[in-house]
Image (cartoon, rainbow, N blue to C red; front, side, top):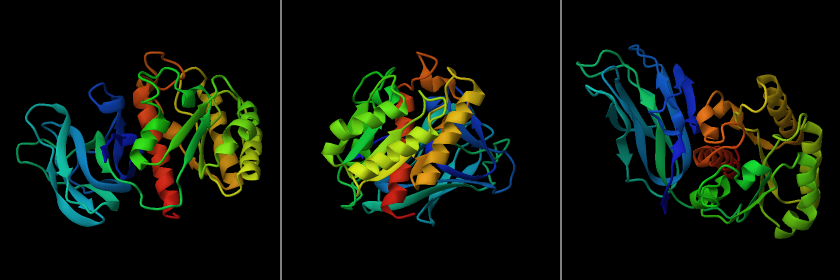
Length: 312
């Protein structure tokens, strides 16, 4: 079907990892383990796929990692190279039965004799996506403000997170972004514009235009359930930005999380995945994520959709 990028920020990590913000990585971000001989770092990602390519940095201080598919050892990666190489295809899996799989990359704590340390890193994946094969979700609507609309995105609409999700899932996705709108204004559009489509799933990226979004967002969730009782909802926090202060951003983020928790709505934590990454908003440089940032938004929503489909 489609090979599409999954950024390192969308993987789940355990153990000793550090986020590196560097122009030599996709989205100017990668995850590096420590350089010790301890097998103390692993990363995983799950989705409906039939294969996946793994991209990383290689260098003279990098070691080896094992690749597991569904907890079964598939092979080993040696990330050593005498000189630095960035964004390198280091491992490819093409022999999977189409369906749900979990890919894990685990530090071995071993290395090439010429390497000076045992670092491993992950830049990004390109899974070969397949349809989830379930009838639970047959249509999706993305609602939100100018981020959902795609201000600062070139080219649009193809690079919008909704369009990327449509490619990843092979499920129709409709996009309704209203630039500059606070949550209560978006809620006012639901009855006339959005609800008549009777989607199975609403994705709501909320809070950028609200100092305190919680109460309005909870009312918005209630309105969706009133209008489309059988639909499910996934919310999302805003991404990192420099337009607001750190304190202002954290209020927005925490209130969205609280609204989702109070109303039993899944929440994609976009802010944590992008914290400190100024590249995602270039060239505007303040609020709106670029096409690469939209890719990460799609990745994070995809993770939550997979959990929803599997009742996790």
